[in-house]
Image (cartoon, rainbow, N blue to C red; front, side):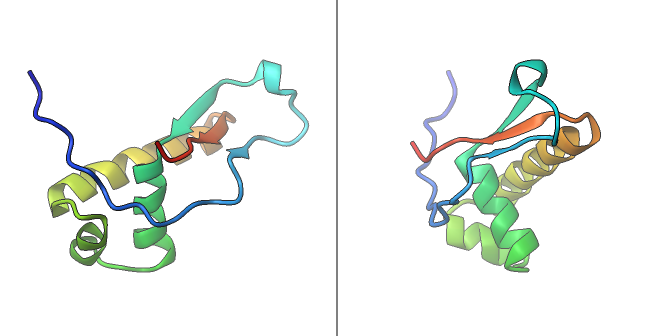
Length: 93
Protein backbone atom coordinates (compact mmCIF):
# COMPACT_ATOMS: atom_id res chain seq x y z
CA UNK A 1 0.00 0.00 0.00
CA UNK A 2 1.54 3.37 -1.02
CA UNK A 3 2.10 6.23 1.38
CA UNK A 4 -0.62 8.88 1.45
CA UNK A 5 0.11 11.79 -0.86
CA UNK A 6 1.21 14.98 0.88
CA UNK A 7 -0.69 18.14 -0.07
CA UNK A 8 1.38 20.25 -2.46
CA UNK A 9 1.21 24.02 -2.44
CA UNK A 10 0.14 25.12 -5.91
CA UNK A 11 -0.22 28.84 -6.58
CA UNK A 12 -0.13 29.15 -10.38
CA UNK A 13 -3.42 28.92 -12.26
CA UNK A 14 -2.91 29.24 -16.03
CA UNK A 15 -5.24 31.11 -18.37
CA UNK A 16 -4.65 28.49 -21.06
CA UNK A 17 -5.54 24.82 -20.74
CA UNK A 18 -4.59 23.42 -24.14
CA UNK A 19 -1.81 23.59 -26.71
CA UNK A 20 -1.94 21.77 -30.01
CA UNK A 21 -0.10 21.71 -33.32
CA UNK A 22 -1.54 24.19 -35.80
CA UNK A 23 -3.57 22.89 -38.71
CA UNK A 24 -4.33 19.43 -37.32
CA UNK A 25 -7.89 18.70 -36.14
CA UNK A 26 -8.20 17.64 -32.51
CA UNK A 27 -9.73 14.29 -33.39
CA UNK A 28 -6.51 13.32 -35.19
CA UNK A 29 -4.22 14.16 -32.26
CA UNK A 30 -2.97 12.14 -29.35
CA UNK A 31 -2.52 14.16 -26.19
CA UNK A 32 -0.30 14.29 -23.15
CA UNK A 33 -1.74 15.49 -19.85
CA UNK A 34 0.27 17.93 -17.78
CA UNK A 35 -0.79 17.73 -14.12
CA UNK A 36 -1.12 20.84 -11.92
CA UNK A 37 1.97 20.03 -9.85
CA UNK A 38 4.01 19.45 -13.02
CA UNK A 39 2.97 22.83 -14.40
CA UNK A 40 3.82 24.51 -11.09
CA UNK A 41 7.27 22.87 -11.10
CA UNK A 42 7.93 24.01 -14.69
CA UNK A 43 6.92 27.57 -13.84
CA UNK A 44 9.02 27.79 -10.68
CA UNK A 45 12.13 26.26 -12.22
CA UNK A 46 12.08 27.31 -15.89
CA UNK A 47 10.17 30.61 -15.82
CA UNK A 48 10.87 32.00 -12.34
CA UNK A 49 14.45 30.66 -12.41
CA UNK A 50 14.40 29.22 -8.89
CA UNK A 51 16.85 26.53 -7.84
CA UNK A 52 15.27 23.16 -7.17
CA UNK A 53 15.66 23.45 -3.39
CA UNK A 54 13.89 26.82 -3.25
CA UNK A 55 11.20 25.72 -5.70
CA UNK A 56 10.63 22.53 -3.69
CA UNK A 57 10.21 24.67 -0.57
CA UNK A 58 7.56 26.78 -2.26
CA UNK A 59 5.66 23.63 -3.26
CA UNK A 60 6.20 22.12 0.23
CA UNK A 61 7.81 18.94 -1.13
CA UNK A 62 11.31 17.51 -0.83
CA UNK A 63 13.94 18.32 -3.45
CA UNK A 64 14.00 14.71 -4.79
CA UNK A 65 10.20 14.80 -5.15
CA UNK A 66 10.43 18.16 -6.92
CA UNK A 67 13.08 16.74 -9.28
CA UNK A 68 10.78 13.80 -10.16
CA UNK A 69 7.83 16.13 -10.79
CA UNK A 70 9.96 18.44 -12.93
CA UNK A 71 11.44 15.55 -14.91
CA UNK A 72 7.99 14.18 -15.63
CA UNK A 73 6.77 17.60 -16.79
CA UNK A 74 9.78 18.17 -19.04
CA UNK A 75 9.35 14.72 -20.61
CA UNK A 76 5.65 15.35 -21.32
CA UNK A 77 6.27 18.77 -22.88
CA UNK A 78 9.12 17.40 -24.99
CA UNK A 79 6.97 14.48 -26.15
CA UNK A 80 4.18 16.87 -27.12
CA UNK A 81 6.53 19.05 -29.16
CA UNK A 82 8.66 16.32 -30.77
CA UNK A 83 5.82 13.91 -31.57
CA UNK A 84 3.25 16.59 -32.44
CA UNK A 85 0.83 15.74 -29.65
CA UNK A 86 -1.62 18.10 -27.98
CA UNK A 87 -0.74 19.17 -24.43
CA UNK A 88 -3.70 19.35 -22.06
CA UNK A 89 -3.22 21.20 -18.78
CA UNK A 90 -5.31 19.65 -16.01
CA UNK A 91 -7.17 21.96 -13.65
CA UNK A 92 -6.34 22.01 -9.97
CA UNK A 93 -8.11 19.27 -8.03
